[in-house]
Image (tube, rainbow, N blue to C red; front, side):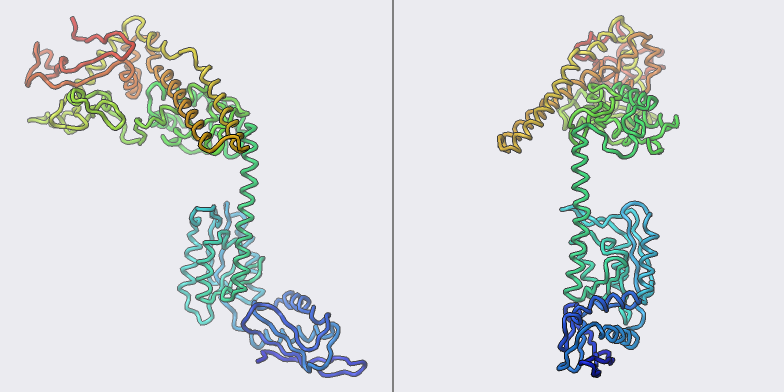
Length: 601
């Protein structure tokens, strides 16, 4: 039945005829339809009438609107009926429009909060124009609504809270959803289906200040909303495509891709900042000399040295910075080296690759854990396990670890720190940790005090072919690029390309290991020109451990018997207790002279 009726006069020649205008708003595909023997001018009136009403702050329904001009036998011509149609709609709006609807306002900004205020202002103005009232606001700042193909929905806490609010709504007139644009609500077609389901089930209308209104209870409303979400997703997807293409081009040319200031460089990403570059060079040298990243990071924090963003250093932050290819002047794109960069290097390439090889060594413990307290924990080997041929998961000898569980037995010996085997802490050798570390330190100092010993070891650090390895790496990169181009042109099969890449990757790993092997021996550099005892005292625990690894192999053997060792004296016992040097086998590393014992006569 009609929801509104008005009258106007139509002309037939010079005679006026009364025309009755009726309007009906009902279910169906949204649109406006005029009937009643109309000419083209009247049929095109829908745009003029709708614009007049909207500009007069009247809402236009997202439904099927039928306007009938009676009598149907009377021809109607011209635009003289437009005013009657506008008046008709105003009458319907005043007499039949529902009471003001409540809305929840959703605001979102992908980066920061700039723009949130504008969205709120425009959305509030639109809500006032349609006669609504905002009863709740949900804001997701620094949150994207876009998801890459194959990835899950991006987390949006306030958006999820809004969905729960809609699900719990029990108003006689369901609450509506208000946003600045449909793309503020969604840029992911798959995620939008949940929103459509919730709004359709609860009959929640959707109003936006820029993209119109959506009645998600109707097929047309859902189609329009889905189309706008797909358009919003395409907008971001295509923007990412353009940005990635620009980054790839810049990477091939070795240009900086922008972003936050890299530590060691000025804000332009190209000019070296000398003070920070010197820190990176020293950190790389110290790390290769045996210092832990944790101790270096703590020292920097103590000295007030901060990251490029002003935060204090952590072990993981320092690790990420040392692993950067840009340190060696190498351009990286999507995790792969693509050639030389436009900025100068702060580390020579062999040093950087040695750092990377050591940091990425799977046999190296990478979790920070507690600070080290003992010289040989994880270094000294268990002689029983060695005789049995037992190895750990990395193929290395089973080592001893220092523990505060003590030596066992009676008295206060239970509180004496001791070295125990990792595999069997009871049946295998147990040694007093303080005595054993002291003994090994004495052996190391005496050996390093011999003329020319440190120079012999550090001399191995320069094999004369570091430049050749760098040139070979550049050749490998060139071959990989050429192979990719040949594959794209159909000159190589996928199997052939994979075989070639595997071969080159293996060779690159060999070059990395060669650089690492050369650089690691720098642990003995301080001993070349200084007194061994004085230098040893000036080293921290990490550096001492590196020296021990470099020059000797310490194997803890089973004791030959209980009680006092052979040749024990009361004076010896005051300093060493029952420690027996003969149950400790110290072997020189490959290429070194035999390690002397302080007890040798």
